[in-house]
Length: 637
Image (tube, rainbow, N blue to C red; front, side):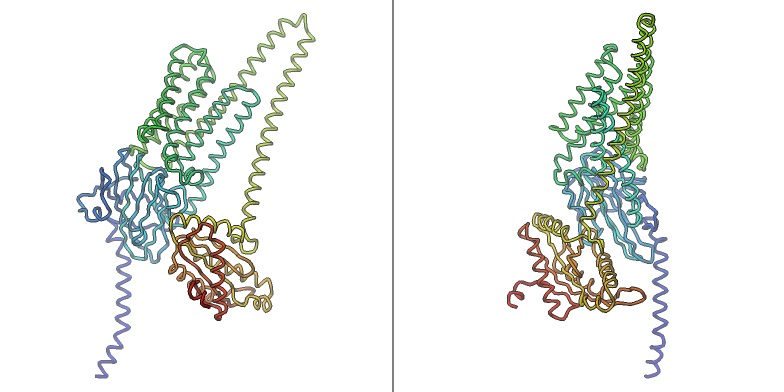
């Protein structure tokens, strides 16, 4: 009996090794087995377009529930079989199914980025357990899990795990998913580059706007006013299309956001028509030019009325048709004016041609006729910027031509009157030189003023950010905490979501300063701030409350979740001492917490006091522990 027992014990290590080898083989073979149907999650800076791995099912009525869709047979699903899932402007609801698997040895955290900010509704199932991701530009902005202008769907898949994701999208605009899948690090890298390019794009538009408004104020030439209004409305159109407007201007004004897109497009078209009419001097041209312009302006006013008072889809399609019609008409008119001897028209013809190509690429990609790519996604931005640059050059050439014509006229007049008024000719020449010098000086002063204003704005932004931060740890300071706490309480009270506050204090911190020195104490504060920040979500807020005290503000977190996080923070600080000048300084953390649904939007300071009372109880009870505020227990104490 003892012999068989010893033999079984000897076989246990062999069984464990065999089990480990089988697990490794399953992990290595999983991508090969699932590769035909599921999408392997990328690693590094690689981005994957999930369109070829998706299956779609159309729901014209839009009434199918997730339970109905889950039981659909495979024959009901159609393979997308293209780079992006695009279905045009039908208005139906579309369900998309995507299988992904993690072939890597660890979970890196991924992001499914939907690059169409104008989707009305997008629901995602299977991203995070039973939670349903609901977002879109016809839902409040604060519903999004990630505060971003586009729809960002975080995805966490364990090593070797296979996951099925369902997406439901429904919109009155273009049902174009424009999705890409990447790691969170790749997303952060792409976001930095994207924000830089968008900043340069809108900066260039603002520079054009300020420059042409300045020229209008100096010359009183209305063509510069129409062009400035065209640039401003086009900038607003792009700000809306890229999702910045819903994020920063009107996150809760969903009705206005819906109509603002065709409205801004129609406004840009109307001002573009007025600018073309003036700069090509069509009021002096043949009557067909004027009739065409008046008809296009009437159509622009009609689309404006549809955007304000009519259904969204006809207004949107009407605005697209108006843009194409006006761009084609302007291109033809500029060509005809060029042939008739108006030399400046060739640059305007080039600008309108670029805008036509860009607008067609953008519209066709929205209908699904052109595949999704960075070029088609930003075609209208690139084309608009090139068009406006060409128009600016054409306006400058027009100024030079006017100056040259004036100079020739003055020279001819001087030649005719030279015999009788030689002194007057000298005076006119001097006056011309002074005028040119003055114009150059005004341009130099304008450029200097723009540069100064930009530097002042940048300095003010940096100063405002510094005023919000703690100088030692880089965390938010107490004033910023008070402001954000007031907003969070009001938001949680309005949405009836739970809010949690963690009040944290480093135990025996005075002894650390006395034993190791204040520089070591500063290092410990930075170490603790960094360890705590790493475990918080991007939507959470961490602030230095004062001395060795920290406060964490946790949105959408109930008592159980806050207590679990607090225990993790306490254990992490205890397990990871601060390393300073080859010394290991042990630290511990006492935490007081309070969580619940606020009943008063101005309860922030009171909740801080309750968390502080819980912290006091934790320190009085021996430190290095977590205590939550419970009214009955504390009142009894």
